[in-house]
Every structure is written in C-alpha cells, then in structure tokens.
Length: 139
Image 1 (cartoon, rainbow, N blue to C red):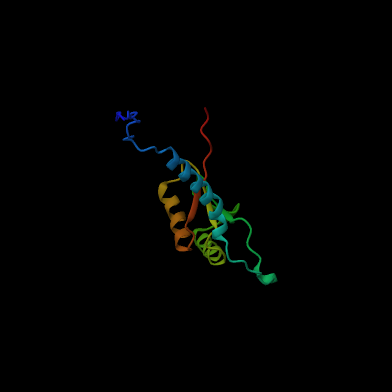
Image 2: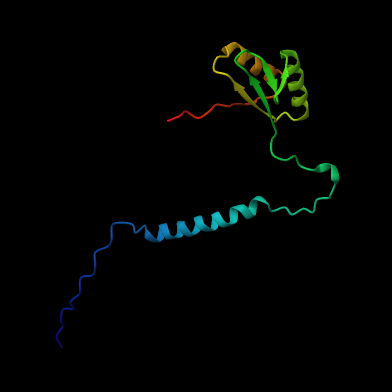
C-alpha cells in the first residue's frame, strides 16, 4: 500500500478589507426607524383636557403701525399722535400683549434721531419686535 500525497487546493486568501456595505444597510434601516418613531415619542402623554370658554388662544400675532412722515409728525395706526401719546399707547399695547410687533414706516428725509426716539418709546413700553417697512427697489 502506497502512501500518496494528498493534494490540497489553495483557497482564497483572507480578505484584508472590511466590507462596509452591510453596516451601511443596517445604519440606514435604523435611521428610518428613528425618523418614524421620533414624532411619536414627543407626544407620548395623552390627555383629555377640560373645556373652558376663557382659554381661547389668541389669533396670529398682532401688530401696530407707527408712521413718521417727512415733517416728523407721528401717526399710530393712521391716527396722528404726539410723542407722549405714542409712548402712552405703546405702553398700553405692551401690557395687553408684549408680543405685539411694531411696523415702523419712516420717510427717507426723517432724521435718524426721530426714528431712534420711536424705537426707544417702543422698547420702554416692553415691545421688542420692530419691523422696518420699506418699498422694494425698482429695477
């Protein structure tokens, strides 16, 4: 009986690089799961709140319009006012709703100091949201 040599087939060499495709697939599935479940976790407590008539939410944030014309005259909601009346009415508005926005319309020829006075009166009244209204540039 002769002993023969067993021939081995040479297998593939081991892979020295990591295959990241399955890792990316798993991560994408997890991201999709988190995207779907995140909104559900935010409102997990279910309540049946009581109904009351005095708890009506206010509509969109209100605004008042302050106009300073070329002569420096002040107008609040298209009604002429003095500086003292403007400060008084802005203070009353600030007490009712401190989130009220002021839309400030000032003529180009108005000195900057007059605009700063109006801004100061609004700030003193507790109104910090001021929008400056301008016309779009003509092209």
